[in-house]
Length: 100
Image 1: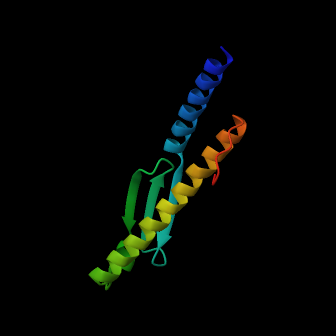
Image 2 (image 1 turned 90 degrees about the vertical axis):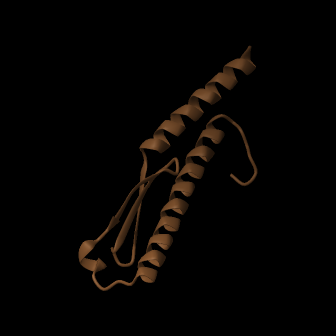
């Protein structure tokens, strides 16, 4: 009976973390503020903003590079937030996973 209770508790906690990550926003800026990208903690792209004033005179390749780099930065930050939350939950539940 205790095993089922522990499993239910773990599933509930995982759902809570998933909901929390969905509400968490991670923002990254690139190109000295030219591009702003926002992801949620559950890795969903929320928005991309390009500063119109800075956009003048920027070449296509440079804009693509700044966009790519800024998206990668935001994704890495979102992954880090998710990993930290997962690690906290696993520790609370007394689970040890190598690498987390």
